[in-house]
Image (cartoon, rainbow, N blue to C red; front, side, top):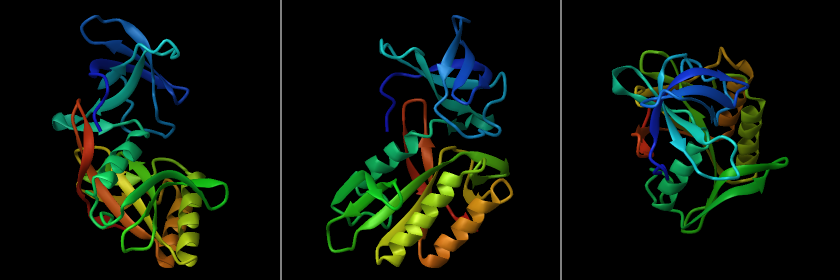
Length: 235
């Protein structure tokens, strides 16, 4: 997934009201307010003074002319903070049949109704295999070494999605929970059970029911975010 508009660097002043961030543009030194497309806690990714990357826009319908996309990390690493990016990355990879274990399907449908008033991220069908329901979650929490974790705060919606995937398995379908790690300094993945014990319980229930788990990293630059290699999961 390539960014439609070249990103520009800035320094974060503060993030507030979840979806707003005051920033100082590099070069001009002008302070502006940018849209923060992330409702989560963003632990470790919203420190004042950190270097970030913004996508400018000239859309007259948008009040905010910058959207926060990346955060710079130690050692030249990057983290993607836009929770809308993982679905776009995964969709491109699915349509190109580049996702290991999910490459045999001819049709990729997004946002298909299922469960209790929900929409599954992707429904894959066609070919010689039964259809598969795929949910995608963005992971960018890191607290210990090279270990990425999910979630970074309580997510009742995420737990519900796990239960609905389990219901699909019970109905005779295949279901996959896919975590996309949107930072380049991680090589392993686990659940942050201490931050949301309820999610951990729902995850165990879903896995016991037959829901498959996939974890992938990402390749991130200031030009694009693409699917990376599979990561080991530590339950």
